[in-house]
Image (cartoon, rainbow, N blue to C red; front, side, top):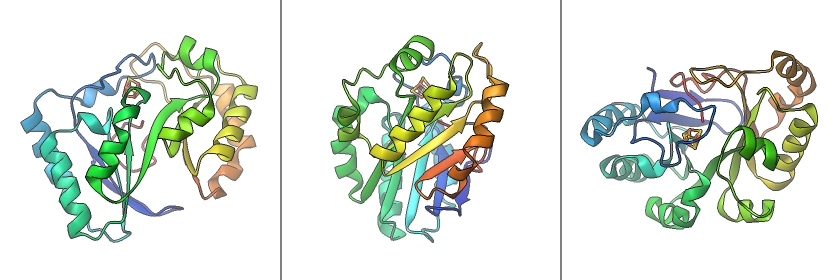
Length: 232
Ligand code: SF4
């Protein structure tokens, strides 16, 4: 599995796919990311060190992802990331966390001590679809509350049960409320959740303009960031 890559479009950055414990939420119906998790902290850290050694700091921006949340990475790995930020002159760090960690984000931002862009996989702002179909566990009251904690949202597109209207609204809200967002086109995996090929085709036609939208990363395939076979 490739664990280091560079994103050269839009916000240029290095990206590492690290290994951590299983996601504390772990209940999203479409998620099989657990396949890259391990409870063996020493093993996880050894894998992570190899990926972290590739970082040059050339863009001053780094993104760390894992198949879960930044909080599930080994403490030694977090220390190593913090050291790299200092030693390589990195001024901006992207990382990911689920809603359940919202009250701990400030502590993590302070720990890294650089500008942080915290991403969260809300997948959709449509509550019934998000919670009924995807079981995401995001019980925020309104979008302002979500914005209070997170800088960037990840949206999922192309799941059976999703509609064109939901997608249009999701993109509109992400554009209006967030300084950065990611759209993942759903790729079927080992779960029973199915993709809607017609909806994906429609999305590709209607939303090609997102390719030129600076604050949006679109992953037409889940390896578009160049790491792993996984995406958040
Ligand atoms: S999609 Fe993300 S939050 Fe949901 S179970 Fe998978 S790793 Fe956890």
